[in-house]
Length: 320
Image (tube, rainbow, N blue to C red; front, side, top):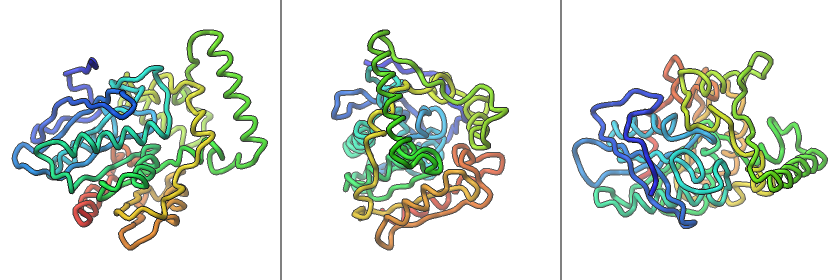
């Protein structure tokens, strides 16, 4: 059994008009997934949403904020920790795999579909940052999803294979990345433990602007959490093995359900949502650009409350 805290240890204020409780469920790999459920205090037969992300964050950060807000708008929601992270199960810790991460989302849909107070025909998902990409990939396989909302999306396989802004999109750079990660595997096996990647830098003074924005969220009171990989020591160095050998979105053009991509106008990562949107087919797909917003402004709204919750609510309801 998982050990989950009962204290309110979120990075956002509790809304007393929304119910909250801890829940868990198993994915098909036998890993127990920890989640926070948020729900309206009255009503039944709820529309439901499963929410995850950002990549390397925990449910006490952005995904929980989204889950609580959408519950205040009439949805039953769960924000979950992916396998190997946060309060969820799975060993070795701090690993990731696109296959397992997609299964985590599907297991969340399994769970929601079997709740007595949920309309199983009205289930949607929201993915943030790297989990925005995972949400698109989940929509490729899971036909139970009625609407997918991808927020400030990262395609983690593109980052792993091409580097930021596709600056390393060549065979030599990929080969050198493979050499480095495989050498680390040898070292880790010899040492008997996995070296961690370090998370977001502790000294952003000479870092690119987008890294400074990550620091401002993950390393300050704004978004720091003790269980967040990005706030602390990061993923295992070898965690990216699968992503180096994988490309997401191969069947994105075959997604029949509705998809909304939300991105900040001045986000460094905007190109990933724009390129992914070009892959999608059908008149139930939309790209929504938030004026003046950076990548991390869509984690918690930033100073000016950039998150377009009205738009998200309208899109999901329209496509249920």
